[in-house]
Length: 378
Image 1 (cartoon, rainbow, N blue to C red):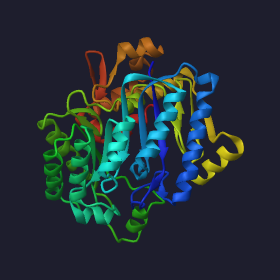
Image 2: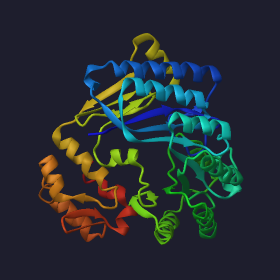
Image 3: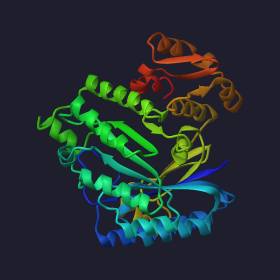
Image 4: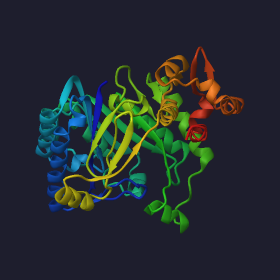
């Protein structure tokens, strides 16, 4: 089974008001120390007998904003990964990027290092919405970033957008969709705004500076996007993800298909089919742990076969194709309809799931209420 490798780059030029990820504004000296610790962690994993024989076919740089790094930084990280692990072609190497951080020279270095897929955080196609969110880029820079990537030969581009922003109207959302699909990206991701505690957005809402999300309007935004993307010829293959044929995110599919992955960097998670483990969350603590102990692991959870099957169920249901009940029974030894029958029947009566032809999946209504479905298995 092919592994995925995740590399966390926690640095940003500015902290967006809605972000609750392990990321933040950086200093150049902290970046240098972090990259040294990251290289150390990768090299140590490459010497770990428990990971010998690991073969990967996807690498994903997430954050934060990995595109704040220089081309030579990404090049050095990938060279270290190649020295430590066997990589199987065709490789998918994804880098998350913010518009405004992508220069022609930097992107050329990314491409020459092996990056062949870039996920661009457009978020909105209205400058006033971007400013309100604390984004440092403009709509014009979204267009420029796409041009720069294509000029460097990187055609596999994802564009992220967010629905349900404060004061967002259906007319504004329609115009965002018009601008998004006019760029013809091979992949698009659409997320509903989620207000997390301890974020600036949550504070602004509590102080009545900004309105809370309107759930009915967000549902309307979501279904409008699903219908528009489908009409544009995109495959709706996961709750929030859409692609042209052959352009699914192979790395993210590992998370939804119960495949193993290895994470490096602060807050990175790993999974080997029998256990999950994760690293210390903050960059400073991560650097200190690597210097003093040579390891930055914060915790590990062994998974029983039943726990693994349960996780595989709700993660697999994120995919539009859902779960093949016969295949699932053979792989995990669990008859889903017998084990969860009463709960599933209740969900079906409420129109949230369906099964026919041996395939269990979310309905159109269930897509927007997926978390209610997943609570059955969590």
